[in-house]
Image (cartoon, rainbow, N blue to C red):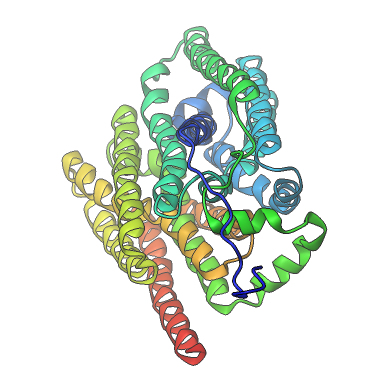
Length: 434
């Protein structure tokens, strides 16, 4: 601090071109991991036949990603704060790589337990991935690029899900010959393992902890805080006493949990009304996610330019509800082209909401760690994702797809109302403080 003016001097900052390589590399290994989340569920009927298990068991191949996240996110977030980005990136890619090779060894009808172990390793890797976009954005990017960088980070996850919808139905056709089916599954697993191994090697040699000089004054200040002055548990306590953030945790969980349920059960819903259309089920899933990626990028650019976090979040949440209602009403009409359109509209807003939630959380919780706030958001999403997937699956089995989708609409309505309440709470807080 300057004694003459009482003002803290500005610290040197710089933006490095390498920042784009870092976020694109993260986006790539996030893609590799998220692809595997849905690769079983989108051809669930084929894996049921190959491993001789029921639909609920295959649903758990997706839900294990959600379940694993819940107990491990807090120690992993602590590790992120203590050891930094590079250690977390190495752990993520190593676990992802190991999981893919375990799956390669599981291509026999009596080895379902082995393929489940491989999926568990990949789900554990996801814990080291989901909370990273906002941290990478703040550590490497300037203040006018943060939302765009965060959107690129989330973009990789969404693109992986999109490829996970599209590729498995093309690589693994529904054939009756078990040896031929094993051959097709083996090809898919080998391709996945090759990509994961390549990315692990690249991360070892390329991924850097942080730039030499910070990108912003906020990061410069954060670097100047001694590690012993930071308490992870105290940060958690402060966040849990932040009422607007608690409302965001619930509303983010409701929206993202609905997306997880729709994605996991998409094959079952499409096959229910359009038998034999496994490939089109994958293409509909692709449409949902591609539209969502466009929505994510548009929202990220919009936030960087306007900083209207509250208004944008509420508008996108409301449109997610509208999209879900329209999708539910048109699914059973018998026209696949209509489902493509309504599913795309649903994806644009529901998936486009994901980076909004991260950025709104950072806005509500500054100067707390971005990894801690995003970890709590994702933990909520996994909890609601498991609950919604199990409940909607049972409702579909007993009452049909319309009832299952109405079930999700109800919770999106609750989430929209709570998001409006968050908006009011923040405005009242700002008014009192002013």
